[in-house]
Amino acid sequence: MSIESVLCVTPRCDRCLVPALDPTGAPHHWPSAADALADLSGPTWGWLADGDTQLCATCLAALTCQARGHDWGRWQELPEACDPDGEDLVIRVCARCGRDEVASTDCVSTGSRR
Image 1 (cartoon, rainbow, N blue to C red):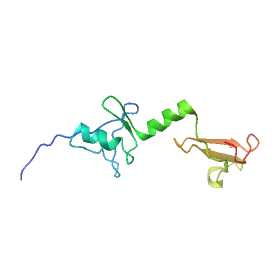
Image 2 (cartoon, helix red, strand yellow):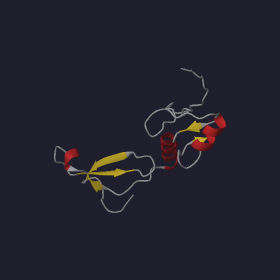
Image 3 (tube, rainbow, N blue to C red):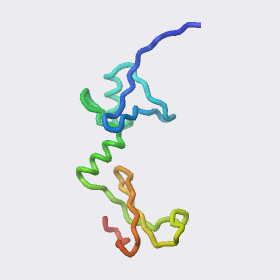
Image 4 (cartoon, rainbow, N blue to C red):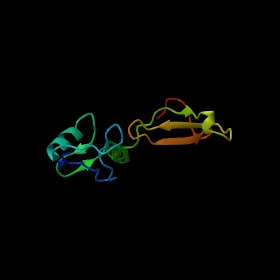
């Protein structure tokens, strides 16, 4: 049996400190920082990544919403399974960061208003 020591790079988000995770949920490894930055800043990973800053797609979306406001979808009725008290509740979700907002139908217009 031979054992080989291999050096690699595993970037972490500067904000949430979560490493870049592959589809199985394990930290992804790159052979160099340059390779990691090139991949992370591309469309597959969606990070803001350069030599100084690494922000994951989730944190980048949250910061964008914080600066520009949410990109709310339309109000929809909350499924009965999520509404055990039988209130007339509606939900909308931000298309950018995934944040949701739940309200009573008495408080909102369920039209196409954002």
